Every structure is written in structure tokens, then in C-alpha cells.
Image (cartoon, rainbow, N blue to C red; front, side, top):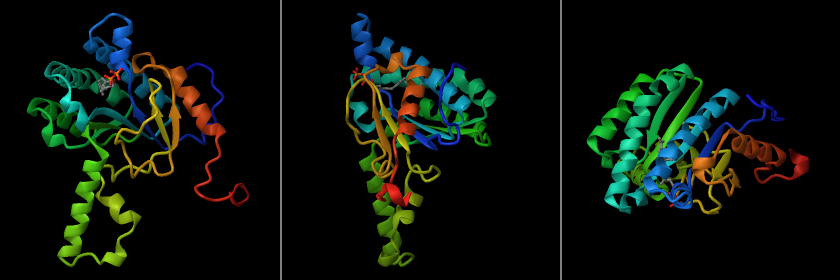
Length: 244
Ligand code: FPP
């Protein structure tokens, strides 16, 4: 691994990544959009390996949003196919790096074959402990929160929960991401500075990092830059500097 000045005792426990710019990368190269996604899948592999090497415990990738279903059919099919082939190809990498694959989102909307492959890899890696790699698939944060609110409302309705007892933990335990800590660092590539309905509850105190790099060009060095930037910031969680 190349040189870096990171303090490995102060790494974010949870990184969330909005992998944006595959389409623009392809356009710049005069290629079809799907080529951008293929190249993007390679960047995923390198980023996952780099995070595992550094000791990041939780990495969550925005791989497909609820809104992405509106893209042309051919692009949606390609993304699903790419997902299945990447899962098949990378199972060994996940096992070698002791990584546990998870998925969050409205997974029942995925094509049956995609879901079957996904579940197989999730099952095969469920006892791995070095890192959680969570794919947000058919994911939208408002959809997730509506699901949570309905669950909480039904607990209140059937008398198992008092309204006054509803707190942060009540919400957290019903989130799709209930097995993950809050996000410490959110990275978005391609120069867009938006959250796009990603982990709205979970990023309450996250540091936000935006880079101009298009996702297919994202490499280990860009991850290290983001981490360096994270470590240069002071996280106060609402307190004053003196109280920390
Ligand atoms: C955003 O680029 C990217 C996506 C919608 C999909 C992300 C998918 C991958 C990186 C590939 C496969 C993933 C895995 C987990 C193997 P965009 O198409 O919105 O780019 P644009 O804004 O430039 O058009």
C-alpha cells in the first residue's frame, strides 16, 4: 500500500459512498453509458479492497436508487447483470478479505435472479467479521423512513410501545441499516453536491466530502485524500471545541 499520513486509530467507522459520474465518464470517452458502469464496477472492487486494507469497518455503497428504476430498460438490465456478474466474480475477494456482504433497500423489486444471487453471497459471507460491505439497492431513504414510521406506528397501535418512549434508538432499530452505526463520512464523486435521498437519518452528523473525480476514475489515492480531509476536521457533535 502506498504512503499515507493517516492516523489509523481515527478512521471513520462507517463510510457511505455515492458513486456518481459513470455516464459522464463514458460520454467523455465517446463510449456507451453501460461501459461507464462496467468501469465503475472495477472502481468498486479497488475501493472495497482499499477500505478493507485500511481497516474501515463499514462501507455502504449507493449502487441503485429507487429513482434509478426510471432509467431506460436496457441500462437497468445492464446494471442488474453487472451486479450479478460482479457478485459471482468477487465472492472469493470477499472471503479472502473476511468481508460480509449486506444489502438494504426495497429488495423485493429486484429481478428474481439478481435477488437469488445476492442472497447467496450474503449467506456465504454472513460470518465474516473484518468489514461490512452494504449495497444500497433499489434504495431510497424516504421509502426506508416511511417503512420505519409505519412499523413504529403499528407498535404504538397494538400497545407494545408508548409514544413517550419513542426515541432515536426506536428509529435506529427499525432502519434497513439497523446493523450499522451512523455514517461518519459521506463521499460523493463527480462534483455533484447533493444527498439524493441517501441515508437521511444516518448522516445526521456525517462529514460530507465532495470530489470532482468521476466514479470510474476513483482510486485508492482519492479515498486516502477523503480520509485525510476527514481527519483534518474537528467533529464537535454540537459541542464547543473546549468541551471536546
Ligand atoms: C451513477 O452514475 C452510478 C449508478 C447509478 C450506478 C452505480 C453502479 C456501479 C458503480 C456499478 C456496479 C456496482 C456494483 C456494486 C458492482 P450515473 O450513471 O448517474 O452517471 P452520470 O450522472 O454521469 O450519468
